[in-house]
Amino acid sequence: MTQAAPTAAPLSQRQKMEFPYKHSTGPTIGRFYAGLKEQKKIWGQRVAGQGVVVPPLGYSEIDASEAGEWVEVSDRGTLTAVALVHHPIADLHPSAKPFAFVLVKLDGADTALAHIVSDNLDTAKVGARVQAVWAADDKRSGTLRDIESFRVVG
Image 1: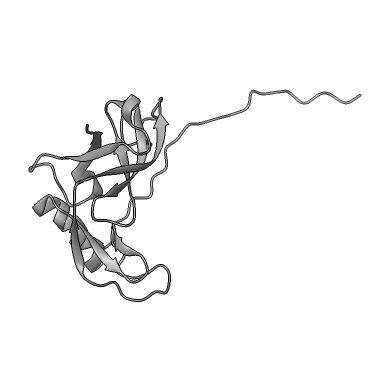
Image 2: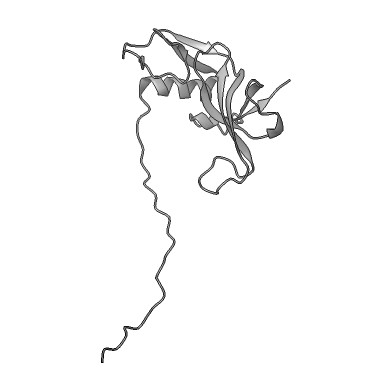
């Protein structure tokens, strides 16, 4: 007669894994981030066949040709896409309160910048006009988060 193997509850463990790293931004994104941090200005680059690209890549995604002149664009623009997040996940989303992931076509740019709208979400619709909300001077660090969010304007 064989004896049944004892049963045990499955084991589980929750753990957070991170892979921190540092890398150089390079001359193109470095200049873009420096403009945000030091000047509160948003810069794009003129690219053949694409117009003014924000954020700049330094080259054309169409034919890999080198990007041209730097162009300052406005911190105002139009929403071209909106995705509401009603229940943000801690340590995953950029805001602890409800927000919207958005694409903003800034005035003077021909491409859209991905960012967030964090207030008045009921007015965050495709076609709405928005303006950048800048981080305080002593809080800007040379990242895209130097623009805290965008807010819908009249």
